[in-house]
Image 1 (cartoon, rainbow, N blue to C red):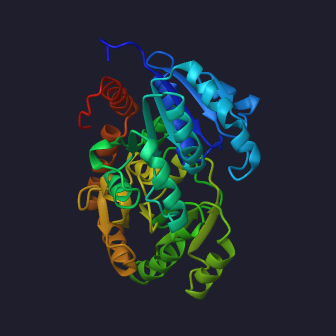
Image 2 (image 1 turned 90 degrees about the vertical axis):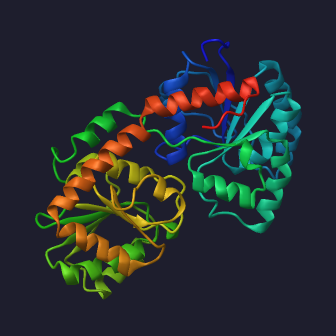
Length: 382
C-alpha cells in the first residue's frame, strides 16, 4: 500500500466486552494497524468504553449511544448518526455483530462510505429464519464480507446469500506478544490450582455453553479412562452447565478423574501441563483455543466442524474426527497418550504451523492488502 494514501477506516461493534473472542481480535488488529498503517476510528453502538480500557486503543473511540433497535430512540437518532459519519469521509466501514450490522450498514451507505464490510467470525449457529430475513434485506447494502475461515465463507454464501467473490478470508491473529511468548514456553510455569498431580492429562479450554458440547468431552473421558486408567481430565471454563456436567461425570464414574477448574487466568501454564488438547464444539468458526493449543506445542483431537480443519491438519498436527463421533475422538486420544514419539512430533508440527499461519505480522499484512484491494477496486484473492 506504499503507493496509496493512508485509508480512513471506521470499525463498528455493538459494545466492548473485554475477554471475548471477537473483541480481542479487533483490539489486537487495531493495535497493529493504527496509527501507522490506517487512520482508524472505533465506534461502539451502545455502551461507552470504560475509561480504564481507553489505553487499549491507539485510535479515537466514540459511542453512538443507540439503545434497543426496537425503541423509538434508535430511529430518532438515525439521521444524526448518518450525518456524523458523512462528515468523517471514511473509505471503509468494518462492521461486527448483528445489531451493528442491522443498524449501521444502512447508515454507512446513506453516509456515502464507499466500502461497507460485514464481518462474520462464526458458523452462524444463532441463525433463525426471522433474523436471516432481516439480515438478507440489509446485506444488499453491504459491498463485501470478511470472514476468518473458509468454512464461515461457505455459511455466508449459503445462508446470507452473498456472492462468494465478494467475501474475503483472513484468519485470526494471535496478537498479544507476551501471551505468545508464554505459550511458546508453556510447561515452565506452575500447575493451576486443582490440576491433577500425576498422570497424563487431557484437557479442554471452553466456556460451559451448549455449543461447546462439554458433555461429549465427559463421555470421551470415560472411554479413554477404560483404556488408559492413569489418565486424568480437566475442563477449563465457566458457564451455566456446570452442575449438569458434574452430575454426568459422577454418573460415568469420573468423580476422581475429571476436574472442573473454572475460569483459568493463566492459559499458557495450563496448556503446558496438558498431554493432549481436545475441543468438542458442535460449531466453530476459527477457534482461538485450537490456535493456542498449537502454539503451546500441544497435539489436538477435535471434531471436523467449521474451521477446525483450517487449524488442525489431520494426521500431522493432531486428529480430526467426524462431528459427534465420541468413540473416534476417544480412540485418537488414546493413540496419542500411548505413543510418546507421535505425540511429540505432532506437537512440534502444530507449533510450527500455527506460528506461521496466525502470526500478527501475517494477519496484519493480509488486512492491509485487503483494505488496499477494496479501496482501489481490485478484488485480489487472499
